[in-house]
Length: 143
Image (cartoon, rainbow, N blue to C red):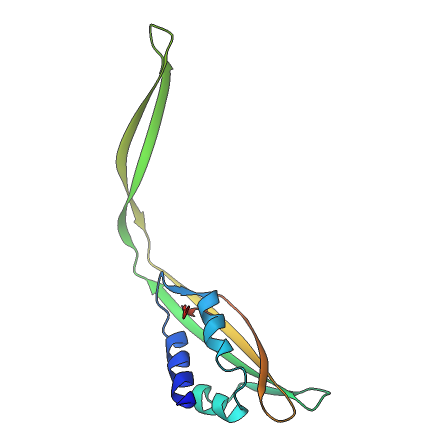
């Protein structure tokens, strides 16, 4: 059962959901691996791109993911507001609010996001900690 929970956690972390995916969500999903063995990492995430030995007999396993994103661009509407304030004939300050929509064109764009995750394993091969960095380290929050 523990293996399927990790699989679900990884699948959810891989599915980047716009608006719902956060770095905190990614942290929550990766935290699910703490206490697992390196075998679980291999099954769930595949082989790491690097394995480095630590002086205490442990290892650091590095995983790296890079994705290309594309926004087709197009026209979109932006709500705007303009305020005009004046003093009327009686000396009172008056404010008029005009609300209108601006239509803007955004050209297509393509960019790359990446995520590097490092798991620290102790000498027994158990995950004891992790670190991650990158704008692609996003997942839906668990709690």
